[in-house]
Image (cartoon, rainbow, N blue to C red):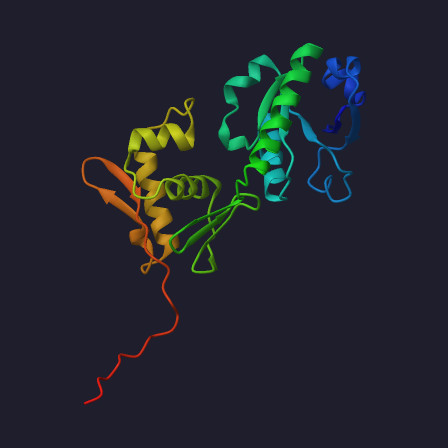
Length: 238
């Protein structure tokens, strides 16, 4: 039996949002879907977010959850019609239809909780380090030589993806698919715009970290961390 946290503003939470929960033995605690909900939230194994209505607001809320450093799976409860609008940018680990049966809901919960536990056991770090860049996935923070970068969500995701594959060249189409998702219908020019903005925020000293491969795409260029101290040259003793 798992402890679940249901974030919703529905009047009859469990029975209205996800009826199948009432047929399972999990302990369900309900809190309002607000940014302050997790401040005094009890320990839980997974978070369920009511995403059946007001999708733009729900999207903002799920992204906000990730910035709080939640370390449990986040599952979005939504309608079949809303699935077309859900992508990786929402920051959720899985999607559950409100009409899903108890067996499906239980299976999705087991898989989501199990994936996180396995990743923790394997020692997968929340922080990605590549050269002088460090990226903290838990807090959505990126730093270069200790300086925090003021990045948008997509700029962060683009930098993270490239830093996870140092030296590897990705075409614009590949980056569009990996970072923006299959359901994004914009052109590859979007990638160029975000790379330009990302370089500007990295600053003149570090903009070369995002390298351009002519007629192909972009790659993350690894540079070894520099020492802040200058080692004096040795003068030979005559």
